[in-house]
Length: 295
Image 1 (cartoon, rainbow, N blue to C red):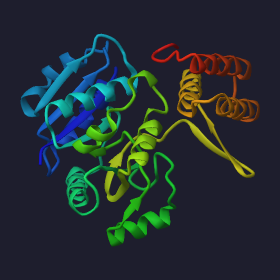
Image 2 (image 1 turned 180 degrees about the vertical axis):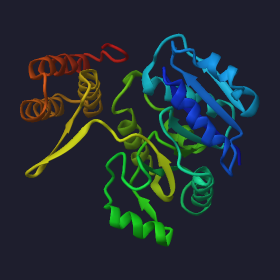
Image 3 (image 1 turned 90 degrees about the vertical axis):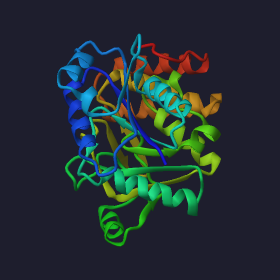
Image 4 (image 1 turned 135 degrees about the horizontal axis):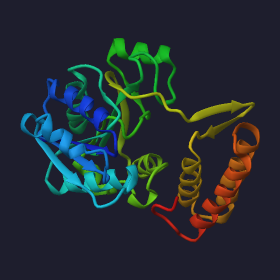
């Protein structure tokens, strides 16, 4: 079966090349590495040509006219890979990379097994860590459970950290479509997971396929019985609030999301007044259907 990588990049050429170096080192080679460049201004294409990546790797480089955000880039890349007829698509950011030479082989081999034994709609992930030991993103498994799974070869079912070495079968795109481009950034992963869950897609993390990604600078804080998400970037605050409300699709849920953000900002965030204004704008935009890049 054919396998394509889709990498979305924006002004991080050095990190992108570190990722490509590790892809070149993989025991399972990609049939195509589709790079979606969100209108970078750091000379990404020139650096790739200068260091001969186009000669050494099967790169299909696509330069977009404007920055469409992570969501827009992945949406474009998934549609492109699907139209090109690839059986499998691996989605990854430019700032991550495989931890070792076997990362992709272990991921794809498990995907091909599941395709036959479980479900033709498969969406599985490498285990995403920032140092090989500690998770970059929260999943509903403890490190002890993960280590047991690694020893026994078990999958971490229902757990996934998209889009960081996320493998999807072409049937996922047929049944569910691509990520929502109009989310721009934030929650596009959650929305895509939710669609796949409704579709009955088999979702899991392959515990012994390791992918490196910087630790998230956003936070998840537990206060008594509730969890609150905090964001270092105020723009992320806007897109998270707007896109979460957009997913909920009714006024009652919108008010619940807004109330949660007000509590979080009041308790844990800095720039409280600025963030409250941003959340109000995000709520109005979501209810009026104002999507895409707005901050």
